[in-house]
Length: 283
Image (cartoon, rainbow, N blue to C red; front, side):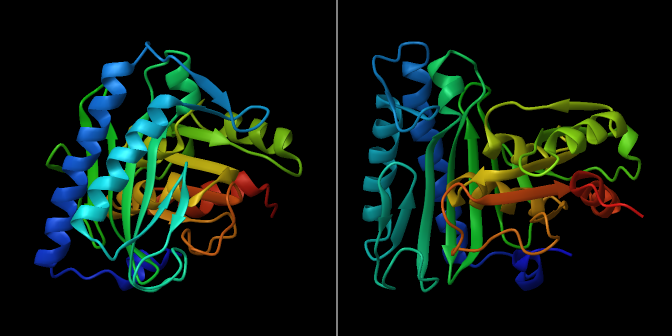
């Protein structure tokens, strides 16, 4: 079962407005990425948002650049950003599901960034009337930009990419993070069934990788927010992956609270089997 993006996607190609929005978002993500690259391994300040959650001055600089540009590009558009929260637009509250909403993660993988681990990204999505319409995930270290509009295809640096069809789980390399009931047993079952398991520290980048087959599967149980998945989930789906929540239902819902979201992505040929394995279903 695919999420609402695939169900509503048109194969007629993006509208001129959406194409212009995608070009804008791509350029903006790359501009923000230059801020990240210029200050990489030169972070001056790290603050704590929680016992294990950190934020740097670079998160704030990147987000300020992105928000200023969006306000100039679409003065009536709403914004939902990781560091500053919701900014209402003409449609009302940011998460009303009415009108245009930009969902922004100025630096996904902040812990990696603060510790000098070169795996992080900028994520920008635009949601139209509650449905993700475009997404951009930019990795400034590798100078790689994943992008898509609803209906596909997905692109990497302007070249169309596709999720490889791998029917056998024992050939999968997956990004795995499980939580909750019997998570240890379920993680062990996944590790036994697939070729290899990784946890890279940036959910947005790892999920976007599914569109290109760098990861054959992605799953995170809880802990995700809308800004982690809005762009990358659309990119993975546009690349041909089946993307759902862990109940097998739609992966995107503006009503989900922060850090409460679970997502699973895999090739359609293996999605059902991978989902059952992750959930520990028997029979």
